[in-house]
Image (cartoon, rainbow, N blue to C red):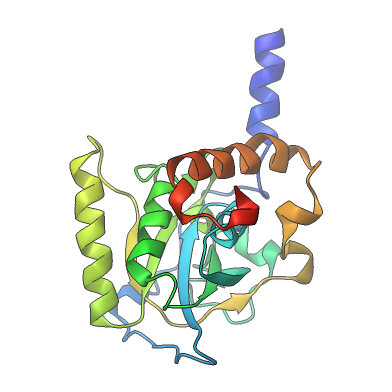
Amino acid sequence: MKMILLFLSLFTLSCGNSNTNNVSTFDVKKAKPVEVPVQDDKARAYFASGCFWCVEAIYESVEGVDEVISGYSGGQTKNPTYEDSNTGRTGHAESVEVIYDPKKVDFATLVRVYFGSQNPTQVNGQGPDNGSQYRSIIFYQNEEQKKIIEDIKAEVAKNNDKPIAAEVVPFQKFWKAEDYHQNYEKQHPDNPYIQNVSIPRIEKFKKKFPELLKRNSE
């Protein structure tokens, strides 16, 4: 009975209502990438790696990162909501916008953080979160970024028996998520999902890359 209850609790413990519906037929991979200009000496990068609560907290612990915003990207629906995204029909994945100082941390390092803070072979999800809205995507804004991503992805593939799940997609647009999703891990430290999924994932990343952390994140 305990094993059954444990299984049920893990099954229901997720960032949102997981749904395995297929994404739209819209093929964002064929679109021309949109390059976001550097503003006030800060650049922006975009990643999807499962629940954005986890990914936001991971990147905010990295030296050189000023701010991370949770949102949606990779799909065709305008002004998506959390509820819309969780249907799996918007085409979007939960994503983050990483605002960083390229003089302190480069794009290649952010890509290594991406691969080093997840299970790179899990398809359409991370941990208990499953569905196209939780799939892994690295967005590139120009050919230089695309090459960096593909080179690092090839390195990661050499150390894994299964194929790497991350999609390499031209960036189009980032839609900011609802205010209550921002800084969720910091504002809800007692949330069961944060306690059992987010924090272990963050701590695993910190142990793996201590040299990349801000001093107050150690």
